[in-house]
Length: 43
Image (cartoon, rainbow, N blue to C red; front, side):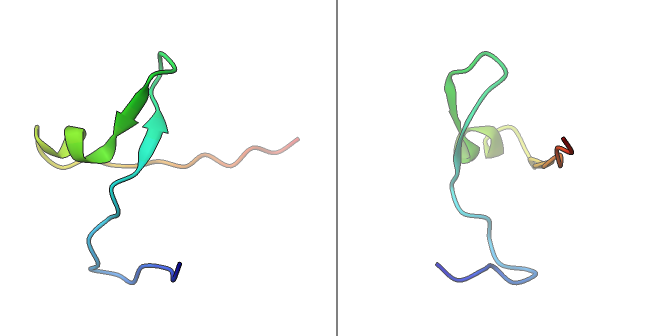
């Protein structure tokens, strides 16, 4: 899968929510913009 470029729409990801249940990114867009933050783990 090629990497997205700036300005490309985000893919509809499914990630684990804070309670462990799957959350679809598209379900968050219904309320407005969504921000994804990826934290890097050292250790």
